[in-house]
Length: 450
Image (tube, rainbow, N blue to C red; front, side):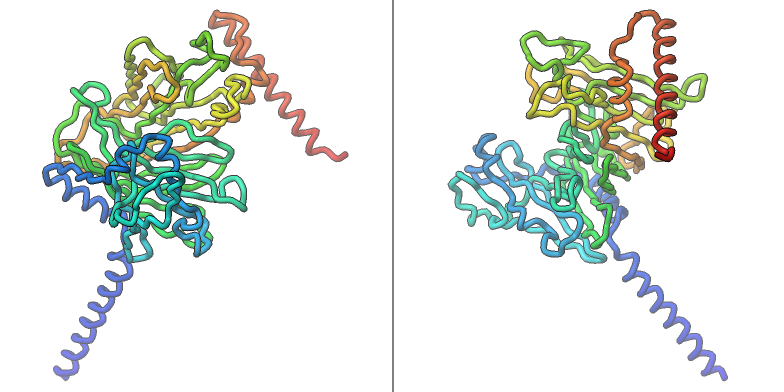
């Protein structure tokens, strides 16, 4: 009897160990956010080591036009052969893009490095000997998706240089950019640009409608783990999960930074330019939980200042902020190539409470439209201590504000007939009531029988 009990106990232990082993292989080994966060934690415990850059001389001295001759062959796109809904193409190193990043594919429990292959690129008119560039790496990558037509995979998002990325919704053109983190943009001795050093991209399922990307961030005073869940559509949405570690203290820790451009607009005309407006964004919008009514909306028009201009907007509870492109009429820009009327707004919505802090807006003077001169980000009231994990999450929406376009075009909201507050309120309320009544009448007409 004693021997039987011992055998039964041993069998139970064996089954338990087998279950634990199966669970470990099936679950705990699967790659995820915690794996990247652990890499960030270990990296933060070590002194910063700048990446060694040893580019071939012909790539260092390319220049803009020759770099543009280098194009990735779309037939070699990642997952093209599997006919999956998303595809990846890659940016070549060269010219200003000198920092290589590692890019990996995640398939269930397996992580595979995506290797550079010169045969995947068309070098155009350039005369190189790329067979000597073994192990060169990539500068960044693009994600493609059938955004506007089922017959063609458009660019959806691009990650290139430092921690910059930008995305598109349906019918949009690239405009403003986002970053993972801003350090000492204002208030410190010198701005620091953390950069993504490694990416992991999950291979999508055949019917997937979203794509998951993990990224490892590094800089002299920070490391971080990021998870992006991209959901393409009329408005493309990116859900971002992040965990930061600081190696040392910072003066200004900027979360969810947005970078844009404002050269001139209806509030600041520029004589001599046939285009009435040239900008990727025309204002900063902020929503808070502050105020007597339980919430407050703020709008700050952008300008091209004569000297650097910093504005700060304190809030106990942030509901959202964004750099917005609200004027959607082509006539406002009259640029058939740049199509500023199709450039998206970007709106940040915190997931969970971010606590008290401030939205900071930096505007820089510029005389050329190729320069980004606007930055906005959230600064928490308390930055984490060095080595302390700092978690936050947010939703980023790349959008076109069609509702505002309708209001401006139908009600001429950009032309108030009076400058007094009482007169403007009365005029605005009357036009909004007229719009609502008109919509109800039109809807009744459409739903009625012929």
